[in-house]
Length: 92
Image (cartoon, rainbow, N blue to C red; front, top):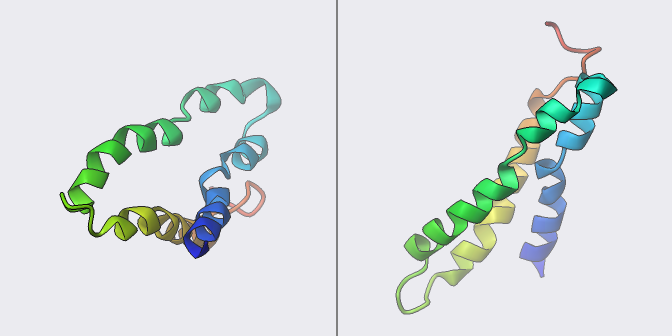
């Protein structure tokens, strides 16, 4: 239950691009960055390749495969909060 809560909380970090695109791009140009969205596709391709490397052949260590995505997403969220600036606050 804790891992599921963490994944739900951290999924907000993964899908922040909607707000970022709305902030950084004029409405007429928002289609261009949307075409480049691929994080969900990358996860769907990499997960079946990585999970067998983490989980042992006898099924042990499945907890690592289940708990690591929320942990990585929370790390991404904290990094995002630390580095992201709105266009008004951005130096460049």
